[in-house]
Image (tube, rainbow, N blue to C red):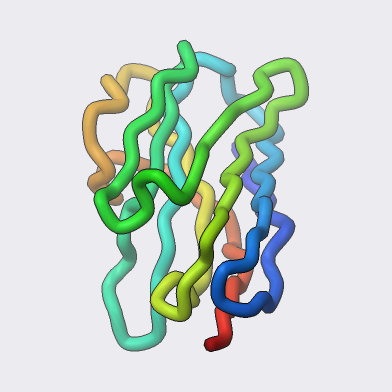
Length: 125
């Protein structure tokens, strides 16, 4: 059983920053691809950042240069540093883990089979 728990969400004004954390427990190894997704009201879930076991990141164009994904394998934790936040960043943010054999090549949600419950991020103008 694998469990992912997000934390760090909240409400900020435009231009503010938040740092999300995702703590992973259970039958999971540090070589798995991890990612952050978000879902705005009335919209489909969007992949925004992923990180391979070696720390190689990939970002969606919508967050590139503003967000940074990192992982601490010793703590089984993945982070998402979000700077220069905009109202369009509002949504529920989810942490996800892919199967061990996934190449960590795409932010396609169907490639990830473990999900957290999500944490709300609200950015006001």
